[in-house]
Length: 58
Image (cartoon, rainbow, N blue to C red; front, top):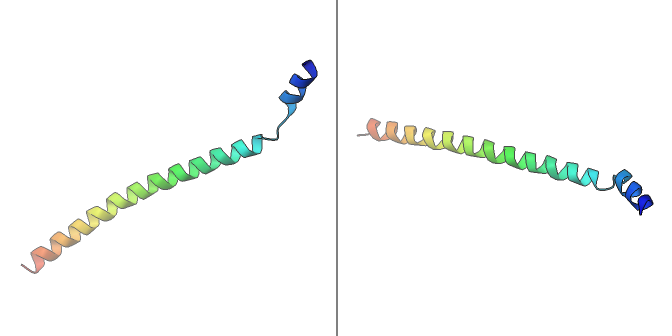
């Protein structure tokens, strides 16, 4: 049992997988945050252009 625990403690086969999962989750989270920021800005810009054009042609 002691040998098994020492081998289990020193085994690092899954560490790379965990690193990639965390890295991928961080990238997806950042992409969502950037998308939401750009979406809000684009909607504000399009509302401003629409307002300007409706006042210009009225």
